Length: 199
Image 1 (cartoon, rainbow, N blue to C red):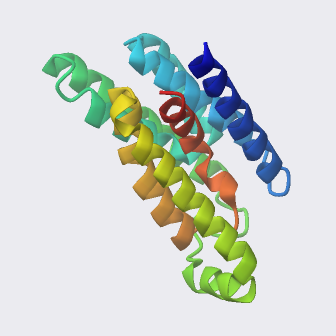
Image 2 (image 1 turned 180 degrees about the vertical axis):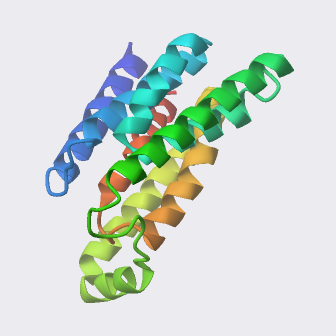
């Protein structure tokens, strides 16, 4: 019972922190992103791949980071599905992702701006100008890594795989193309960290 209470408290604290931090930089697609990634983990754990196949186009319309779900599928189910089913599901996701991404680029081709902004020099300047904020950011990231390390062996295989797929890529892109303190960049990782944390 005590472990259940700790798990519930951890989830409440994580959700409160995520909501509080997102209040300053929220976008309309943030909450759906967390929802789609959470549902995908549930579908993968239960092997409800048809439900996931229906969800995937919506996740892709919502945000281009849905490609992380395809990467997770490719890694996690590589030896868990027969070859034909694996390839069919993988090709389906790649076709859906490619079609939606290209269609959106064509539809919004006339809008100003560019697809990706290289932000690393700007981010380094931000960290230098705001050392306290940068310290809090990096210590928070280290604290999450420490939590994952402590709980790693007890966490489900799916959560561990998801962390290994999502965390390095999201961290890399956070520094390269994200805004220096835009922690909402890691929303895709939120359900994974919560699952590991309650393990």
